[in-house]
Amino acid sequence: MSHQTATHPTPSTATTPASEGAVILIADKFDASGIEALSSLGHRVVSIPDLSPETLPAAIKEHDPQILVVRSTKVRADAVEAASQLALIVRAGAGTDNIDVDAASGRGISVANCPGKNSLAVAELAWGLILACDRRIPDQVADLRAGTWNKKEYSKAPGLAGRTLGIVGLGKIGEAIADRGNAFGMRVFAWSRSITEARAESAGCHACENLINLARMCDVISVNVAANQETKHLISPDFLAAMKPGAIFINTSRGSVVDQAALALAIREKGIRAGLDVFAEEPGKGTGEFRDDIVSLPGVYGTHHVGASTDQSQAAIASEAIRVIRLHLETGNTPNCINLASGTGAATLTIRHFNRPGVLATVCDLLSRGGINVEDMENVIYIGGAAASARIRVSETPKSELIQAMTAGPNILSVDVSTH
Image: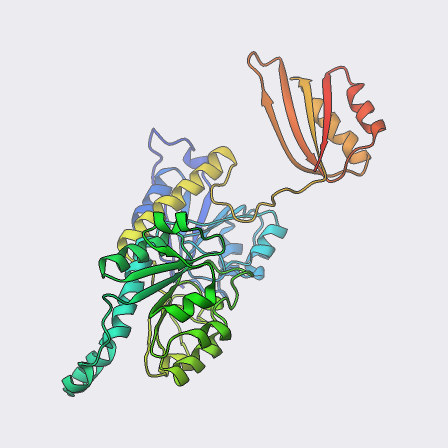
């Protein structure tokens, strides 16, 4: 296993001295400018781009990082458990399905991503796959390399102008695909769970409120949704059965979004042509053996989950990862954090108090004695520094006796309780 440790003198403008810098482990290929920028902020950057799910735990144990950066490498529970001071995992990309978010959350580790920075790169690959499917470009290349000339066969192509493009998921990637569809002279329709005609119109397309109807009406379908429990097998047997015979199906999102067995059946029985950048089962690192029967089917054109992998997108993602890390270390707030609970707690206490040592410690001690857990807390100071207001979200509504005990303190001005 090869690795590189990058350290540089701290410039005078750095906010964190080198002696106090964090240890940052980068477990994948990462833009060189990003490594340089993190090092220049005074952090010790350990870059080991060939780590795998099996070797990551040992690397974490050896280098004991506060921050872990990954792209495609899977972060399993054993990697999380190997960490003693890990506080942040950054996915240098949009999705986080290669990270065991539950394991990270259970250890109080923030998980953040870099959304929207690879949209154009993914849209470009999606269109490459659309053109490959329509004109069978990979098959033509293979025949030419094998010494076969077959203009008669490959002259048969439906073409794209005037045909209908359907987009499943109208985020930034979907918008970029729609924009290019209009440039090709296609009629563009989009579906998302919250689609409106106004939203679709702003993206240069028309709204389709029923996913199955989208499958029925479109000649080309591009899937661009995030992977989560709601989208697992969103492209279902019913969806695939509704597609037109000979239609083109593109997936540059995640393999879990598609019922791959049903897709294989549609390819065999309906002549669906498929451009796939993602699959149901993929290697956990950048290189390795890959076996999937679907890629050997006629009319299937596969790529290596490289939708986001252009120099332009990787530089943009590296810049965003640096921003996330810098703000996390400087402010304690983590941009793009995807595993913070929202709306937890049964009640919120708003406590106005004199800004003196030990006031909030006393409040927390009283809550602890009452068997009440603090779920979230923020404290703001007013001009002059004499008084402050604390907002404390708690696991259950305090009884009146506990509120009276708080207000009895000489430094408490008032206690208000609101229930959720």
